[in-house]
Amino acid sequence: MRGLETIRADAPDDPVAATSLVVRERLGRGEKIMGFGHRCLQDPRTRGPPTCASCPRSWRRHPCDDTYYRMSREMEKVVFAEKGLYPNVDFYAASVYHYLGIPTDLFTPVFSVSRMPAGRPTSWSSTRTIG
Image 1 (spheres, rainbow, N blue to C red):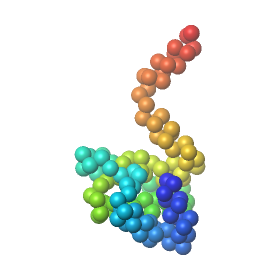
Image 2: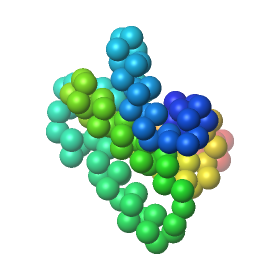
Image 3: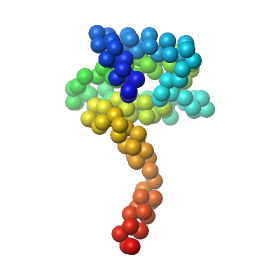
């Protein structure tokens, strides 16, 4: 999300087009793009698109500025064209969290907690209340 925020701040007139340029430049310098990877997972259905696919439907019901979503889609296209990498599921989760009003510093904890097994926190909680 921070990368998208920087691109948007540097190119407020057309951040989507700027996304393509910035990503190509970074890849050309050999830099990694956050939110992409795991070459062993080549099936795009197991990555970001399920999350991504729900975004436009949600935004039609609750209109808002979809610039970060469009920037994310552009970034996905460029990284796939250049490196053959699909986005990780948390790549689109960042845009969703942003539109939900969750502070960027809390993205990682929210993402992590949402994937914790239910038994572990419950077990810890019960030991804390018992004694």
